Structures are given as structure tokens and as C-alpha cells.
Image (tube, rainbow, N blue to C red; front, side, top):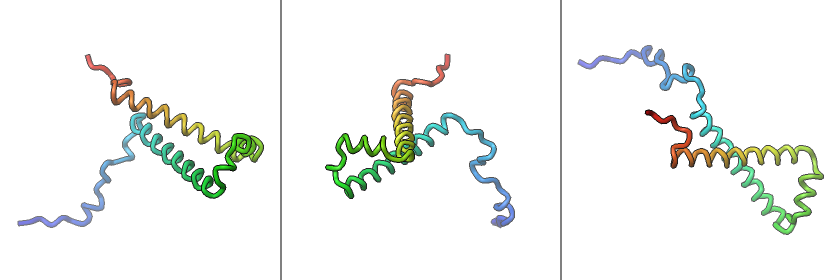
Length: 111
């Protein structure tokens, strides 16, 4: 005979994996933040590409870019700094990831 599963039993079961009991670890937060910074940089690159299509590449000479960045509002300066921070984090985390994968950098050695 087959037993019927009670509907209340399914409702009261915890979600798998049971997330509230896990503490965030560095090994789980680094890849998540790496993906977030990569998505942010891809979005910035996409908007810059759309801007180049709209304005044209002739307007982006060295003097014009410097005037746009340094003589415009503080919002552009802050966004450039955040983009530079995201780019540096993304590059350094990518290098750390490659070192960990190929050379065992950062792993505990068992004796």
C-alpha cells in the first residue's frame, strides 16, 4: 500500500539548504562579489558603447575626455572612481582565482 504524504508535512519542512544557519564565508563571498563587479563593468562598457554610437568616436579625443571628466559635475568623478575600484577589484580577484586554480595558492597543506 502506498502512503499518502500529508500536505502539512511539506509546508513545515525547512528549505534546503537551510540558509539562516550558515555564516557567510570568504570563499563564498569572493565569487559573488566578483560576479557583481563584472556585471557592473559590463554595464558601464555597454553604456559607453551606446554613447560612442550616439556621439561618434571623433568627439572622444584626449582633451575632450579630460574636460568631460575633470571639469564636469562631481557625479562623473565619483562614478569614475567607483568604476576604477570595481575594475581593480575584478582584476585582482581574477588573478587570485587563477593562482588558486593552477598553483594551489592559498590552500592549506595537509601534512
